[in-house]
Length: 212
Image (cartoon, rainbow, N blue to C red; front, side):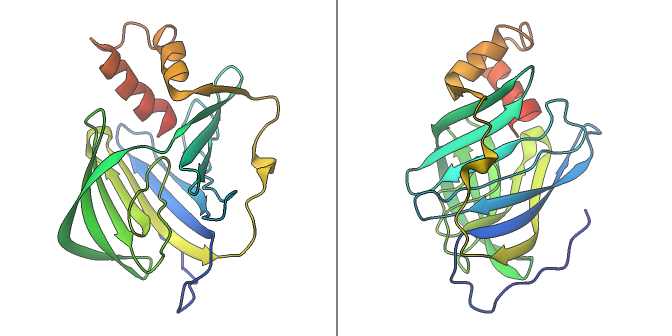
């Protein structure tokens, strides 16, 4: 994966952070970049552009860290905004460290409520509890995220700092809003019908092929 040259202050003490993230995935789906934006001041959020070769088009990820809420805007037949609480992950800390975009990051292993295994690298040098797509909940920004089962990798390639508020202009006013459970139910009963032997397997496929 190509890395972009980063410009970071020596004392990163402003928020939100604007992080350029590269994503790679298996299955021949190619690589893509994403702009992640995270804030801690009420309306702060995380934004991300969609990945390459994605039939669902561009996606926008928004995290309100103060309210612990997430929103994902995407388009299937129409634009949809999926609203839910931030993903609940149980993290286990390790003594492994690596440098990502000039920041010392510590490895943690995590598991979601539906037993999805995650590997994350976070840095306490950026004291914002955010990360790529739907992840967070650590004492610092996640700059690396691996989802082995889905062959997905996110790595920060550039970090910039700004004091600008996150504008709500990213949200399409005509988009249909629903919860994540409503979204899974909608797709499980249509385009993902018959895929997998259980609701959990269908949900995993929707996460891999659409949300992540």
